[in-house]
Each structure stands twice: as structure tokens, then as C-alpha cells.
Image (cartoon, rainbow, N blue to C red):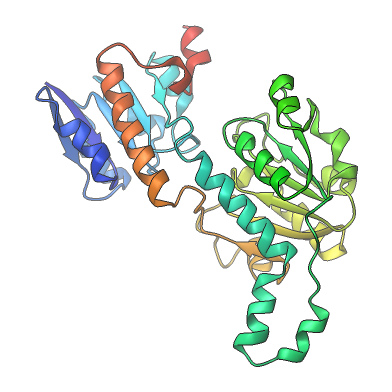
Length: 327
């Protein structure tokens, strides 16, 4: 009998996959705190996890662990290095939420370009005459730089093209043929396109290589008044540098779904200042918060656990494949 720990609520269709198997016992955590998970992890073979934190100290209490399956794609809440060292795969819901994140990206861009928060207030608070000062910025013929041409970036690019935007995609491992097929310019180093971009949107994982990928130097390279959208991970942007760029006018606006600390602490001077700005649109890490994405992520998270137990976990769904191959 294999025991699977579900750390947080998941869509019923994913849970059904686990319950359908007679050889699996499903264990539910009442809450995802360190104390609760530490009591449940011993004798567990698989973990289905959303946003709960899994440091090495916690994972070490599960000697029989065979797989950790992420309800999503980012794994910065899991000590992946520890699991790789033990030869344990970290599975991800590859592509399950990419449509939802891409649509939020475009939604934020439209909110900023059309100043929708401000124009809504014009009507809501009976300030009709203020509409004359709220002019929109056309997306047609504007240039978007998509940093990260993976699952999400490949869905953002054609959506931007549908609005008549010129799109440059950047990735260190670039599929040039796909970029060409989508009518996009493809480059490997995103820095070279920063001076021409009206909009920069980030779709990259958070790792040592990408930490503070957008910092003071990058903001200085951007086209003055450009827009930054981050629906990836908070740590890829130096938030203090972004605030300074907004205050100076070098950066025209920002759309943020993610933050270096979540939820953003109100006593953090940088994050508090960002939250007060009218030129910043905010979301509570809601990129994957759609009905379709929640179901797809739950189903894939459960299926990845079953596939691992059955020795048929797909390589494309293994986040730490390179680390495992090095063992």
C-alpha cells in the first residue's frame, strides 16, 4: 500500500484519480504548517503539494518518499536539491496553468494601457470630466519583449500578435523555428531588446541564474516609459530598483502578480510603496486561478504521482531531471 499526503485542497477530479486506486491510501493535512506536515510525512511515499513549504528538515522525516508532485510548475517552496540528492523526482503540472497565466498577463497589459482602474473610477465616483486626461496607449504596433519562451511565453506571444503587437521572444535555449512560425523575432539575450520594448513581460523560473534578472541596470536599459509585467516569480525582479524606476519615470507602469514575499508585508517600505501607486496593477499570485487551470493542475499532480509509482513518469514533467541524471 502506497500512502500519498495531500498538503492542501485540490480539485476533486485530481483526488478521484488517487482514490480510484485500491493500492493507495490518501492522507489529508488539516493545515500545511510545518508542525502538521512533520507528523504526517513519516511512512509517506508520495506528496501532492501546492504552496506549502517543504525544506530539507521536513523532507528528511519521510524516509520512504518516492515523489513530490507540485500542483503547478514553480518549485521554489520545495528543497529540490535535497530531493535530487536522494534521487527523488519533483514532478510538475507541465503546461496545466499556462493559458490562465498568459490570459492574466494580457489582462494586466490591457488594464495598464487603457488605464481601466482610473476610467472605472471616473464613472463610479461621478467624475466624468476627468476622462479627458485619461488617454489610452494603443497596443497595435507597440513592441513586446517576452522574456522566457517556454510554456507560458509561447501562449503570450500569439495573443500579443493578435493585438497587432510586434513581439520579440528571448530564451537562452531558443526555439527559433517556433518563434519564426509565430511571426516573432527570436533572440537569446533579452538585454539587446530592452531599449526597443514598450512592454517587457517575464515568464521564467526563479533560480540562482534568474534572481533579480530585472534590476537597476536593466531598468536603465529599458525604453523610457515602458511597462513591466511579472507573472512569473517575485524574486526575478529587484523590487527596490523597480520602485526607483517608477518614481523617476523611467518605468511607466507595472503589473505584478508575484512578490518577493507573499503576501506582501505592509510594513515593508518598498512593497508598501508599490501597493500605493496608481501606475501599478496588483494580483495575489492569481495567475493559475482559473477553473480550468485548477482542475488541470490537480489532475496532473495526481497523475504524476501514479505514473511515478508505476515507473512511467514522463521526463518532461520532472522538474529536477538534470539533477537526477547527475546521480
